[in-house]
Amino acid sequence: MPAGNTFARQAVVGIGDSIGEGVQGADAAWQTQAYSYLNLLNYQIGGDLTLPYIQSGLFGMVGDPAGRQRIYPNDMASNVAVSGATVNSLLYQRAIAQTQAQISNETELVLYPRLQTQMEYVESAKPVVILCWIGNNDVLSAALAFGNMNASQLTPVADFERDYIAMTDRLGTLVSSNGSAVVFANIPDVTSIGFLVNRANAEAMTGFPVPLPDGHYTSILGVLLMKFLGDASLVNDPNFVLDNTEVTAIRDRTQAFNDIIQREADRIGMPVVDINAKFNEYLANPPVFAGRPLTNTILGGLFSLDGVHPSNIGHALITNEFIKTINQAFNVNVPEFSPDTLNFLYLLDPSIDKDGDGKATGRLGVGLIETLAFLLGFTGDTNDF
Image (tube, rainbow, N blue to C red):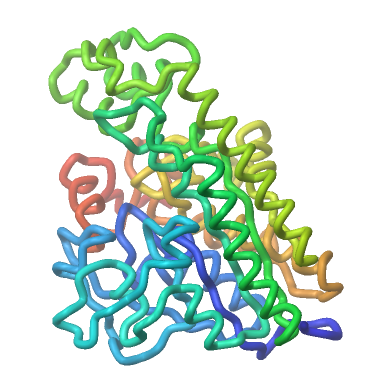
């Protein structure tokens, strides 16, 4: 385990899901990967994490290798977080592509040219620092199930517990045999992401009444469809609404998973970054930059254009929370991003409407969502700051 007052120049590995891969606007490309919390954290640590840089285009979508390719395909990246990963797939989904032409999924796009799972790579690399944020997709699928919003997609507690124990056992072996330091993170409340919309926000976006009861949510896709049709009847279909019972089920399952994460991390003596508590704090007391509070709405600051993945400034705030946990747990002095640096990252963030005109700068050319956002007039602001 790192000793003294620094993690610098240590072998760092990142494992996890789309947040670690650096997805923004439903795509992972070099323009977004550079701002992932893993890359920003590695920069502050002074470690040697390397990224699987991806080139995308106007119609790129994370999870689909068509039209997306590694810029340096033969480089073996040490950030192997994969969009869509659950705890189970981190353990067992193996990259099997032996040539670039055989790459057929996001796991192979990220891990190529390795023939391993995320966990197998960690075990073979034996890094000094392992950054592990996984479990979000075990609840997130219930929030993203447009057209089937009934909370049935949640991973069963027994399955999550079995897989998290198996993962922690294997990471614990690296702690005891290699002296590795592992930093876990828990799961935020996915019913409060920008992708889900309450009545007030739905009415603000559509411009007409939306009969959505208190405590119920529809999706941003549903809102855009209602606006296009000029009709709010979509929310009368329960398949397009998370009702308060389903919202409670998601939150309860999240708490159960977070209890398992904390218990298992404690078992091997490693810390957990409490992202859940911090996200709730941001919602109650939004951080303010350039006089504007960050919100969880589209263009509001915390999320990128997809309403699911953090924006640049969102990743930077997450990075500081990891740093606080690392410094306390390992008695080191990794520097946090200063207020001036956070302000700089905010001002350059392309996903935020900073002047209140309903448009952000955007990243035209980086994936389908960015292309659609530009065509629909949500981005393309040339004087946003």
